[in-house]
Length: 312
Image (cartoon, rainbow, N blue to C red; front, side, top):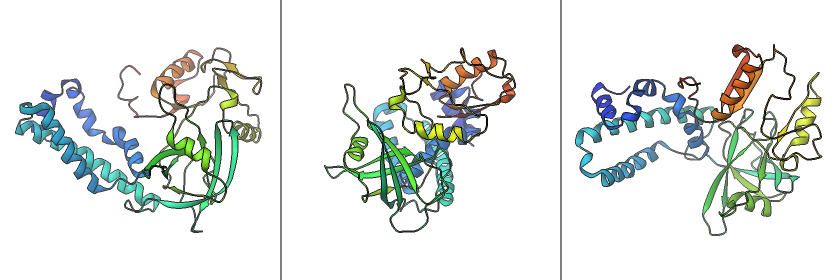
């Protein structure tokens, strides 16, 4: 917790969050959990927080000048190390659970299969190159892929694990990023243009969670896998919404996801996952359709501030 002296200075220097400061400082895990997963996925270490602190506070002093009094500097220094301490603790737990050292987060994996999913997406199946067991993964997690670019610089990107997490392999599905008035995605294009069976890639342990959307059936990677899994469930059916429907999914609905044309049972149990604005809008639709609030379970893709948002 912040000391009373530092809390008073922070309230005075940052009025926009001053009124919510007590809630913020008593719930750092809500705000920082996803940052910790991202840091662990790229091998951030304790020592790097000291380096960030040095240059961040030098920049603050350079930009704000005399406004950074000793009292202000001390208060914000305390805030920084409060947040850093929370992240360091969470990241230490994540590294321990993943059974990796933060200074050695990378492992070589061999490509055992490549499958073209759409014209702009391919699945890459990998197995640990050293023959040792694959680290445990949970549904929805991602791995960092570390590649060396033609100019010699290493780049990192995160890709969701698109296979069941229980076996000794990993499958990632890479979609080509085509720039619109900006450059094409460097790593996605490199992987799709060059990676073949027998190659090796460098991966991190699995971390985090994910949500995803596609605009058309032709762009929808792993669509056949979803149908196969739904068919294996008794009395289950799938329903898709696409901005650009196609003949591949004749029962798909056009446009953004909506309940207007869905016969939804009043006693349905609903599970939502996505960005907060999407889930807030869809939750309102569910309530209007007669679904009880207690039957709606959610997971936020992004900082989980729903409970702290009085408008939710």
